[in-house]
Length: 110
Image (cartoon, rainbow, N blue to C red):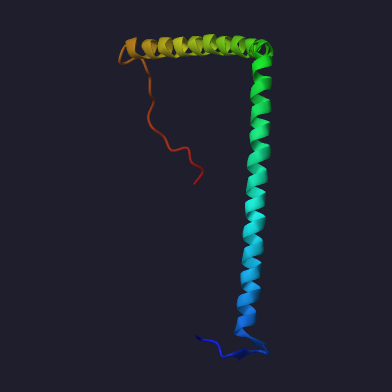
């Protein structure tokens, strides 16, 4: 390979054994952690789903004020858009020479 049989006082076989054992321990810990996470996550999902079915009335009671606020916002946005349409119509319908403009002047301080 690339390393001599004895590298800094230890043999290559010692490194292979050490890194192999560390890999097996890491793999086992990851497997156990993933299994526990899936198990407890599934239990929590089932519990939350059953609680959601029982508290359906509470959810609709909480959504009622939000829906009323959304309707009020929609009415206000419609009023604003109507005002913008009116202003643009008034600007388009005015006579062409209605804006009096003076001579252009330089007002910068230099």
